[in-house]
Length: 163
Image 1 (tube, one colour):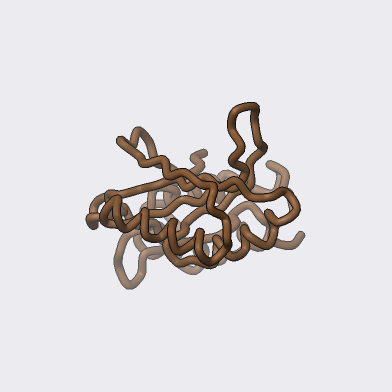
Image 2: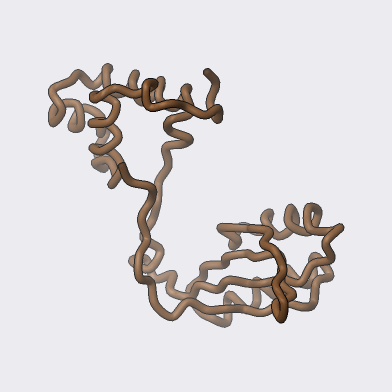
């Protein structure tokens, strides 16, 4: 089975589940993070690394990456920019918008009565003004002038998928 294909519960065993639970909230920031996890689980470091590799190959794990608490480092201005993009241009405009380094998410969404916006980009920055400037640059780059910025006021929850 290749990465990205669906998997079934039979593709995992109790040890895989233990490893996923031990890593889902983050790994230690050390030179050998998997050694620490292996010791906690009664495995070798090599076993943990190999099982993670196999789970990734099977599509059980899509990726292993770092997540930074953006508020902890001062990035407190978060704006969902909503864009009214002509339907036939969404693919091309979405690629342009997604190419901006300040854009962390870019999604197409259906229009609804009274809501003409169909492309959503998330921008994080240090100030509201910075977010507004990024949106203006995106608008200039794409020619899309019908947009709004919806700023986050409060974060209630931020977690990944959990077992």
